[in-house]
Length: 126
Image (cartoon, rainbow, N blue to C red; front, side, top):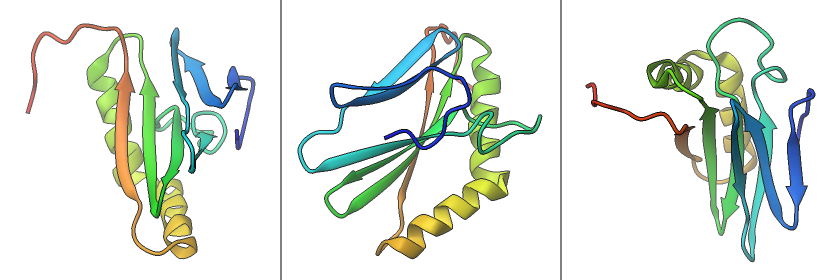
């Protein structure tokens, strides 16, 4: 189920849910007794010029819920990680979404983040 769309290609096809950006596609396919929702952040929830991720999946498996931030990036991997960090540590909208999840479910959500890119990383920074 897609929760928001502002012109970005978003799809739900044969049990898959996903979106496209920076010439990258990301889809997930929930299995039996799992569910997923996609929330578009960039251009929907976040409509400003501050750093932000492209989207977030809410993924439920059993009694666990995952909040998975996603940044689709063609290059500039350092900037992608900055966007993830800023979204997770600074954006009040993210905190609000997290609080809504915690108020509607027992326990805390499991927070994950992914950068999707075909850009090669030459070195790891600490």
